[in-house]
Length: 112
Image 1 (cartoon, rainbow, N blue to C red):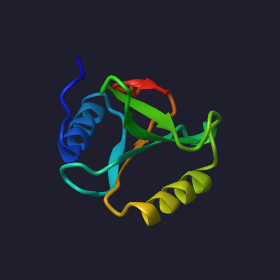
Image 2 (cartoon, rainbow, N blue to C red):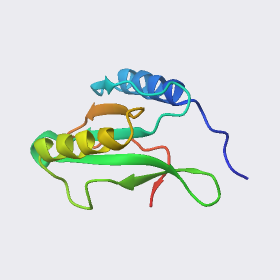
Image 3 (cartoon, rainbow, N blue to C red):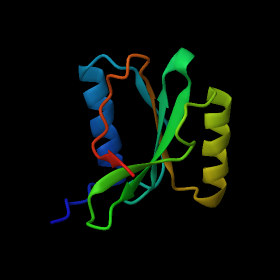
Image 4 (tube, helix red, strand yellow):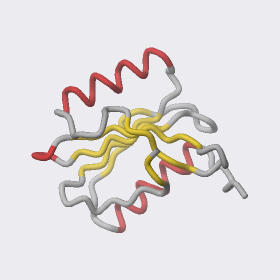
């Protein structure tokens, strides 16, 4: 059975709260459509580079993540370029940036 879909704004605000509770710096760098905007998650590992993930749904309807910038970490400038490119296609995108050099942030779905 597929999990219920949260509105994008509620999901993003919940992640900010979780990061606050775990002392992980996080910021909403772009607000998208409050109900159904696509969510890009920029994980900044600082010296270890960045990764941009796109929130997607599996065939079963469960939340999952797709690597937008590829398998290996990229420079922050390359992550930002990827995000800007996506915004040209969809202006309703949310961008949540998490600074997590110790890899403590846990995704709420599998990577597909």
